[in-house]
Image (tube, rainbow over all chains, first blue to last red; front, side, top):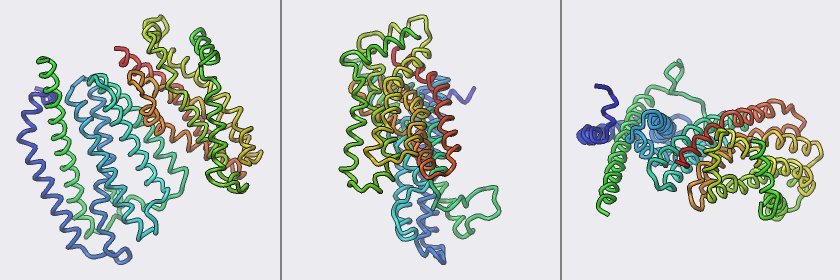
Length: 240
Length: 218
């Protein structure tokens, strides 16, 4: 019994059906705890005032925007190596969720940036690389949409995802080199002494967990939808 | 491989090959810029390097869909795939042909057209140098994009959506090197990075291109 058996579409549908409501429930609980605690029961920052609270949406969504791409990369690799259809469909399912996360991160950042930096947008390395990540997502999704044959589409998008990852990484360091940053450095690292203060840190952890679970649940749901639509296509072809 | 290169070059330069089109497009973009931003000499000469780079990039993009589309339509690509040369070599030859027909003319034309944008002579040298180093990367990356979209009808728009984000690092380092060179600051680092991207892309991307072509010809 290997873990790959769970990738069989029928078994996948079997184990995800009971997991799905739990995943959504857990995501809902974590998100409500994190956001309500963060929004209403933490003090205002002494310099940023209440705008600091946008961190509970901005940081988790930015985190998931990048992790969604990494998940797509892993799923693409699995598809190319082991030819599990569920894997390719999961990568396809993750892309729109990743785009949404990227947009949330960009939008909340802009809303926070207006009072704090005095501008909605600056060509800061982090902001710029996020915008580029957004473009990569769009290209990936456009390629999926453009090709009719599902296996060809899965292959091509997987290769694009791999090549795109390399270039996204290159762009990340290129923009670092290109312009000085306004964005603050990392303050949630596990290996650093000085991080963001505990009052903000604890609800933020809940919010992050909530976003991770939400991503997981949404991808499962979308993958199930993809599998169903694939079955429907097969049925229709048999009929017609 | 040489034969393939010569065939592609001949096809590009003979009638209907669109050899000059990219250059004319480049010229038109350069002419349009002053209409857009106003004719002040100081402004123009400040933005000239970047504008030349972006225009060159767009001109290179314009001719990408020719790389494989016609060969795919008349079946040449299938023949090439069954030919004794590996598909990777075909990819390299195609990129080389694209570079010779667009990259090289653009490199030569850019400093000349820079005069229209009040580009100062010091910067002109850097524009030519960076384009010479950077355009092979543009061609190789573009060939990969063209291979991805070869099976898609009217894939032109999709092609640009896929390829332009991949052009970002090349553009950043290319334009940065020119900017530093024009300001008289040491430009070695971005130049080396640009050369690194080109070398890496030329070495690795033909494999991805060939893989994608195999998938598309399946």
